[in-house]
Amino acid sequence: MPAFYVVVNFIQVPHSSHYVGGEQASVRGKPFIRVAIAHIHINLPKDKDVYKSLTDNFDKLLKPHIEEKGTRTAQYLHKR
Image (cartoon, rainbow, N blue to C red):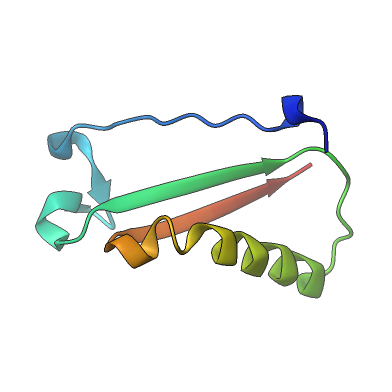
């Protein structure tokens, strides 16, 4: 994949403006990181197994950098 397809934005949100499930995120304990992935390089087949395989691979890549450091995460994969 060409490098120009990879774009990373780190957007800090003040604790007073960050809510998860209707609760202020800081009240819930662990820091929370939301990962939004736009997969635009190729068209993926509309297949649950392909989607699960891809998101499992993202989980494996992110886990040492996020979850193992004591944060909670949610990810969203946008397919074109």
